[in-house]
Structures are given as C-alpha cells and as structure tokens.
Image 1 (tube, rainbow, N blue to C red):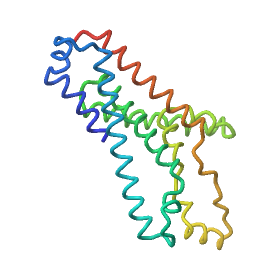
Image 2 (cartoon, one colour; image 1 turned 135 degrees about the vertical axis):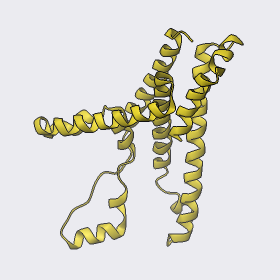
Image 3 (cartoon, helix red, strand yellow; image 1 turned 90 degrees about the horizontal axis):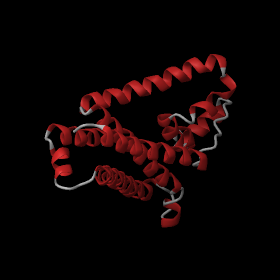
Length: 201
C-alpha cells in the first residue's frame, strides 16, 4: 500500500497531472486533501479486509460461535486503521518531498534506520527513559498502537509459564499513542501542503 501512495504522487509529477489539475482550477489545498482522502479510503479498505478475514478465522478456529465473542477487542481494528492512516500520510509526504517512488521508499527505510540508531544510542545513556523518548518518533508511535501480539497467544503463554517466564504485558491501545499518531498525521499532511505551496511546479 505504501508503494501505491508514493507511486501515486510520483505519477502526478512524471505525468504532469498535478500541474494540469492546478491549471484547471484545483487549489493546492484541495489537491492535498484529495490525496489525504485517498489515504483514508485505502486505510479503510485494508481495515475492512482485515476485519472480514478476522471474523472468518474467528469462526473457524474459535471455540465460541457468538458474534460478540468472536469480535472482541475491536479497538485493535481502530488502532490498525489509525496506524495505516499515519503511515500512508508519511508516505504521501515523502512522495511529495522526493517526487520519485523508489527514492521515497528509500527515504522511509532511511528514517526507520535513523529511529533504530537513535534507540540503540540512547539505550546506553538513557536506558530508564528510552521508551518515553522513542514513543514520540513517528514510526515508533505507529508501532506502539498495536504491540507485538505473539506473546498473547495462549500456547506461547503456556510454554512461557512452563519455563518460568512471565510474558504478561499491557496490550491495550493507549490514548497517548493514538494522540501522537494523530499529531504526526496532521504534521505530514500540513508539510505536504506547505511543500506544494512553496514549490514551483
């Protein structure tokens, strides 16, 4: 999906459709909003797809057949949707910034490595505060919305107890994590607009 977003922006530049749309009367604000609406639509489609697959697998593998039980923890779907909107908005910003899909994806990977580097380097000096610091980075904030679900599996919990490990964690979606992703999403969309506004097309 990220490739779809950055390719969409790259094609706007390479095919001159962005310039043509602006000539035809579309404002730069309306253009960015139209792309953001596309981001929301793609995130919604992905979320609905995951929901349908989850319900099907829930009925196949769950010991319960009640719809309310199969569809428990729907807050994770909302978090998944929020995560996708934030991630795609980041991709939209990079697509506008770099103008080339391959370079935009590369820039995303560079940023991911940068966050990892900061996390590793900060660990030596700020071990007790590393999580509080890293939660404000965009990709880390998106990852925090849905914490790794593997250790929630009952089989994993059973094995852990047998070897004396405690894998109990707070897997709930935290309002602060949601708020951080919302803020980053707004920043990415605003920066996309500012780039288009100041750039000579």
